[in-house]
Image 1 (cartoon, rainbow, N blue to C red):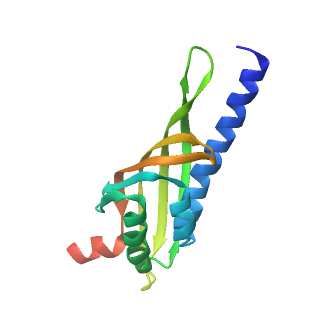
Image 2 (tube, helix red, strand yellow; image 1 turned 30 degrees about the horizontal axis):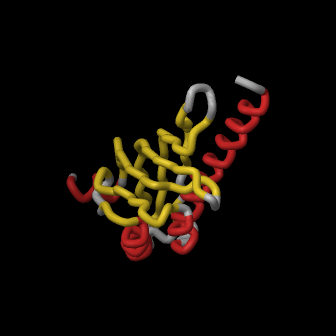
Length: 153
């Protein structure tokens, strides 16, 4: 691999990381226009693994805008990002997959905390406008809400 290819790969990884961070910030800040802009026109999001819906990114953004009103405070922490850029015989391609763990603390209007964690699977594609999401899938592994535990005691 040449130094130029290595630099291109590093630049791609930084751009992909920026998209993933933009995703978290858009959801946490209720920036649904920004959320939609992160996706390709045919991009999809699948939140069924955390009790949500699956569909076109624009449709899911509308659902998130409504649902996230329950949580006026939220913060995505997306870590352990494993980026795999398509390999075209030693040269980076126009597709990438990212697996990343998340912890998502949120606070309800009542003041009760709700925290969940799991793994995202992001599919990205290089477009004329830069890297964009073609898919997001949430795989929730755990959740904790003290108020729910107290209600079952």
